[in-house]
Length: 96
Length: 247
Image (tube, rainbow over all chains, first blue to last red; front, side):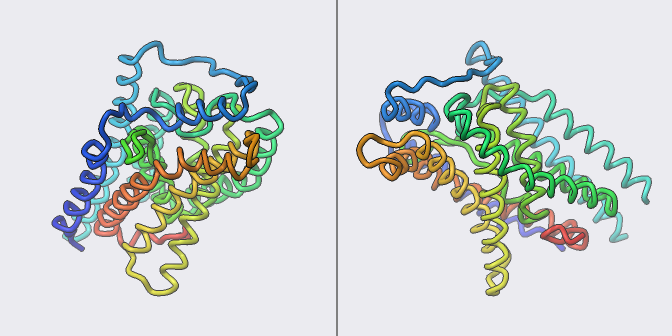
């Protein structure tokens, strides 16, 4: 079976479009995490609520954060594409 | 051939271990934050997950025992969840969230296996990245690994039953599984943090406004990405993959 690249790339294009659309629609926002908002809402609702447990370790700064973040995405996609390559190789070898 | 499969299995297994063990992620948690659920709730959600996860572990062992080549797809499903939960995307609500990637695993292997993969991802995120939390691990596993993956599985199954095209079924399964995760997250927070006025319902609406509405465009993107990945693997391995883990 062959891959219909036009169809797949078209789909990926739509995904990219949906992702960048908020930048055009919503102005003056820094797109903070939904969890930060939830934290604030929790404190609004339960005024005397204090988180009773805190993480053992948190990344020291935004630079380290973005490094770890990029690393995670890179290694994850590395595995996905390794597997795709493996399947393609096996598929091609079986055809012969 | 078997040796090749074994080698490949070991290699991908190692790789999978490496991502889980070395990657850290510092994205803000879109899962329930550490310490935000009272101990009783943490215990209840944790206990609810146990039988489901035990089922999943048994199933994974059986799969790898009978069909070692499925490790390729297991590693892929785990990695897919890992990548998608690293990508914080902006949403129309002016805030960001990330996808779950759980639909792919649920369609391919069934919800219990997807649950096990999600607990691995959530655990490492909680320990290394201060993302989600150890105390809220049970609640987050319940929303993502159980409700999210069961929703995805059922939607896929039902749509296939009524004869919809495969990619349509995959799209809705992955999208709705993603969305269901965050609806449950909102409910879990609302249950322990009811509003003074309006109680649980009012606070559910508030939390759902934050988590679930933000998630809608992301759920659509997740649906699309899952369809693309399925297109690719079915083209190269249509004889190897049988959804629902009936290997």
